[in-house]
Amino acid sequence: MAAVRHIGVLTSGGDAPGMNAAIRAVVRTAVARGLKVTGIVRGYTGLIAGDFRPLDARSVSNIIQLGGTILKTSRCQEFFEPEGRAKASANLASAGIDGLVVIGGDGSFQGLHLLATEHDVLAVGVPGTIDNDIYGTDFTIGFHTAVNTALESIDKIRDTSSSHDRVFFIEVMGRSSGAIALVVGTAGGAEEIVIPEKPVDVDRLCATIEAGRRRGKESFIVVVAEGAADGGATAVAELVSERLALDYRVSILGHVQRGGSPASYDRTLASRLGVAAVEALAAGETDVMLGADGWGTEIVPLPDTWEKRGTVSGKKEDLTLELLRVARITGS
Ligand code: ADP
Ligand code: F6P
Image (cartoon, rainbow, N blue to C red; front, side, top):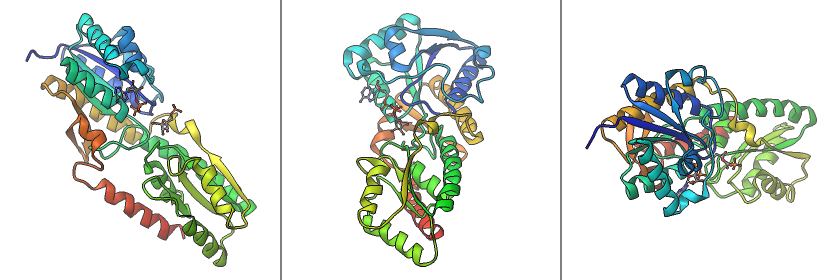
């Protein structure tokens, strides 16, 4: 197999703080190895449209601290179709790009796997999503920043919640994952956390509030992952308020969780995985994701990233249950 000489890089799916740090690491690693680098604008949309721009070491100066993605991102319907992926492959070939790095979530990886297998494109993924829902990596790029952002809001809501003796149902993002809710709820001292991985237990929520009241608690924070129930925190609040007299409010934190300057962990993770991605391509790897495992990196087959759960050493599932246990003891 001929060595990679020209790398393309794109960001896809929901943006995540730290994507810029990953782009920077990919570009700088490629340049350091004497490889050409091209940025592809707006993810798979730009790949199909041929919206390419050359990148050099200086094009990624002063971006490590920026949220969002300088390459922009998109969700692209056309890439779900074989014809769309054929156009993408033809555009890569005509630009002379022989290796592709995609920074995105598991949806982006499903598309990338099809591109790599249908068209023999050398392609690797870097996990970039606030949801932390990808197998094979301790954390995804953007998760820690999103957690910190949500936590700041929860600390503020606690002030008003305790002044008014209210119950707050706070909805955080995460699609079908409860990872953000679990960490934010534990770190924010929430009385309860509702996650998609467990059925909504209205009896339990009511019992927690009633028991807290008996012990003199006057305000409560319930963190609800958006995917925990149809209708999210609003629906959960309605279910509880049908059973208990409550002065309650619902607060949906929303897209604020996607923005902002990346936390140090996300910048470092992005730098590590960006370097590892180019090194993996140069070593002939394809159809894989680069994941973090402690201070090391793992090379994980792309299909594993959405088909399996947890980390390579299998601890993430256990951590979910353990965090729920810790949050319930410490938040009581
Ligand atoms: P994320 O990568 O953050 O999980 P999405 O699930 O929205 O975000 O996926 C981003 C894009 O990846 C989609 O808009 C589409 O272009 C592509 N994609 C997702 N799933 C597939 C699939 N099964 N087949 C082909 N392309 C896909
Ligand atoms: O995958 C990241 C994420 O922010 C999810 O947490 C959320 O469900 C979704 O994207 C929101 O997508 P959109 O930006 O299309 O509203």
